[in-house]
Image (cartoon, rainbow, N blue to C red; front, side, top):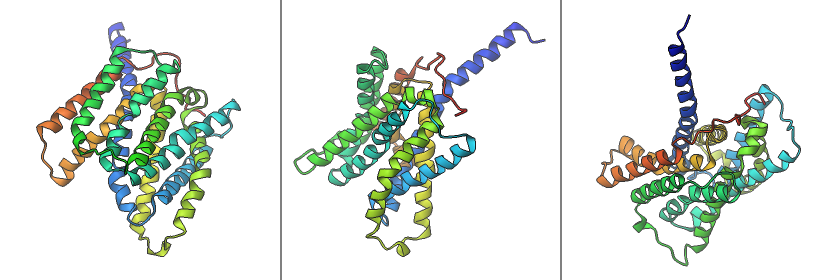
Length: 318
């Protein structure tokens, strides 16, 4: 017979693990997303950007559809959620990816990094405005602390805003607003319908727009000249840098506030710098250490004691 003390310790460990799990998912998401710039750059040498978006969304939609059909069905209990998921597909996938690609082609990479750092700010502002989250000083301090870390890493002096980059800069801001809104408003739909079913419908709807655009863009490319390695990298991007991260993000949203999900985006520049140190042999500077410290501190402050312990748990049976 187990003693009450041992039972309590076991229960506490389980609670602690359950609270840590969504944060582990979110770290994994940013690591997988962090591989996208390098691999995407290789693919874009052979495939147009819009075509890559089309392939990325279509392959993800097919994989999710097959997996969801094996697990269950795609029927939604609430008909209104078909419209909700259609809107979420535009906010989180279609607008998000097309605006980013369009903006990146019309502005500097440093501008893009700087403006993309507004995503958690948009997420928190929208969540508070729609009363999805309550205004807490720790959330504001945490997000701005992590933002300061990102600005330290990317060196804002490299950014240059001018009339030549205005359109691209606006597109990146709209991209950040679109994805920030998606993170802020998607939680309740995921809770009602389940993460897998919701993400499947989101990518099915997104593929209806992105796939035709991608095929049209690809019509100007000689497919026989695209090597097998590129197609394998496209598959990697679709599955490991799109499908898996979007699913894990959805599950995490059932456990933590939208602003906590969004603040993990600030890990991406840190992952990029870490990759450069590990794979390219670049040195670590005091600035890098300071930026990393501020990012980790900001993420900790924002997510501390933020895990949802209510009955709002994600449905994994749908």
